Image (tube, rainbow, N blue to C red):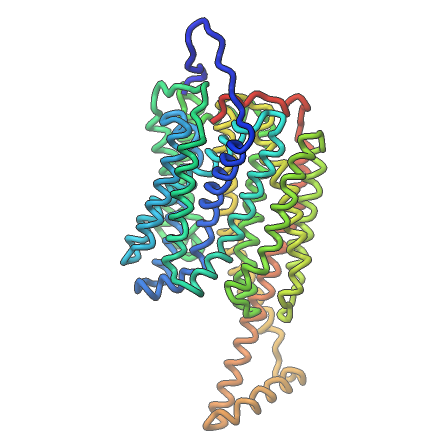
Length: 534
């Protein structure tokens, strides 16, 4: 990609026009809705997988590809969004992504077998992958440089609300309609967003020509990131490196990504300009912090619904309702926090409060019992809402602080990719950690069971007495008692493992907090030129 803007020789570069009034509001709503569509669809299908499995006659393992295919497509396209925006034109790429996402949603809902659904979910992921970074770049172009804090607050609100609304909306649609409506619901919103983007979003006057397409870089990125995402999504189910094809995909991922990094650093026209990380130390720090935030956000959001639904008996809808106030609180505080940063508030201080609050949130979740109810999670999840607001706003702003022109487009793409990868690592590592802790806790619990323990003997006798009235013989009652004891041990093992997983995330956040000391923000950076960012 060239750094030279397309201008008339000898003429001054055209001044960027910032939108005002109702047009500014419409563009803002359009890009936030588009970003939220992408994020909602990362989680909305999760609560419908059992219904999809039954309706399409697919195994749970096969139906999990509905989630995996979308994630792989997403993470491949996100870092290429800056390059694709330059190649096609920012507005054209944005509108095209919305249309592709919407059409794919229609065909997902019309799918008659599992592999047709998986294919269109992949296409949907390609469309969705372009929405996050392009929406963010358009938002920064719409707001004046000194209003970037406000724009970041608005965008971060969508980042947090999307994944949280997904399970709630998905649970409601599955309970009252059918699993197909998890996809059909995107169609009217996508059509409206496409029209609004075509009508109100303008191509920037200053653009950057794509002199040469880096096909090798694109290919290496697609193979490397796609293979890595596949390993993260499927590794735990296949016992990681005990399965040959997981080993091969890991080798392919490592080799491809190393070759990709080398090529992008040495080619004149890279598809993804990794040199922007060297030009901005803050972006490099933001990328690490964003990875940790993605790990914690998606890791905790993965464990919490499993914990409350499997062990505490929550429905999918109740789980979504319990999570919703937390997301709403993040949305409410996002704009004031963005404005505070705009007026000179310390991003270090805000992020310190946010990361400490997230540590507290995860640690408190790790202290819950099998008797916990919805009311026990209310205040804890409100702490999560505060934490995410105080983390997301500064780290998102930090990623683009001090950058100019097309570097902002590269930075938003890289930062969004890192967050998605952080989420994938968070889910994969947490899942594996839980499996290991379940086995450890089970052995520990069984090792402490003794036929000479009066409490155990009394409990088993009580279970046996309760079963005797429903069993045809004392032998069956005894077998039922042992099965009940097995169920108790299993439930306790999972409960302790889930608590360990929450505390592990809290410890990880605490370990990463010293990174905040390396943040350097020049107050003049807040007025950096973003007139040609896309």
